[in-house]
Image 1 (cartoon, rainbow, N blue to C red):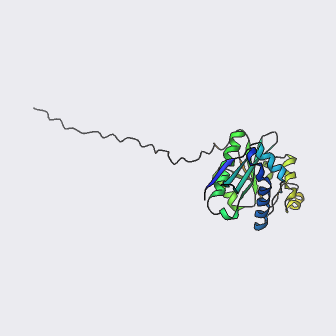
Image 2 (cartoon, rainbow, N blue to C red):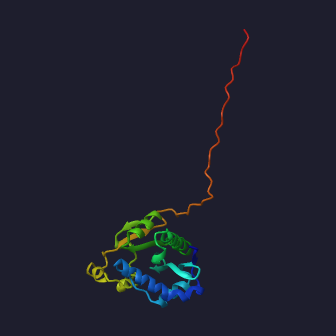
Image 3 (cartoon, rainbow, N blue to C red):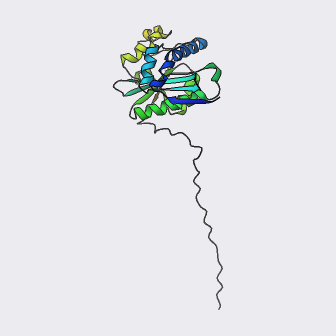
Length: 206
């Protein structure tokens, strides 16, 4: 495996439809609800540099993108997906870390949030400092909730007046939680020097 996770730019737009297909197939296999996105929408995120894409040479193996709401006060990490042939190798965690770091770089003062039914995603978010919250603490931007219309569970969200669904809301507030820094394999452990004091016995003549 020679997978490289890239910060997206216009050179990756050709992968837009494959990304949509991968997200859809992944949701079908898990039997979970997921908001559908068009290839045009994904292409916009790629061109704007608001996505990360994982490739094994030229093969698409993973993806995630950023959405902004409420005048950039809220940022959502969305669409995290890994190709079935590359799962259980820690790749999802690396992609999540990359999109999280990119979100902090582009929007350092924004609250980053995620809604998910996946236990693995919940665990990854928790490790990054996300906290479970009610939907009332997330953005009230209508555009975000419109994105849920393609989800098979949208009727549940509607019946609960957009306050509850099968997804769990997770929030990272930079004002509460300090920025998470990736551990460096070259970090040196600081060791305090041990100073030994030599005891001397002085002999006095009477």
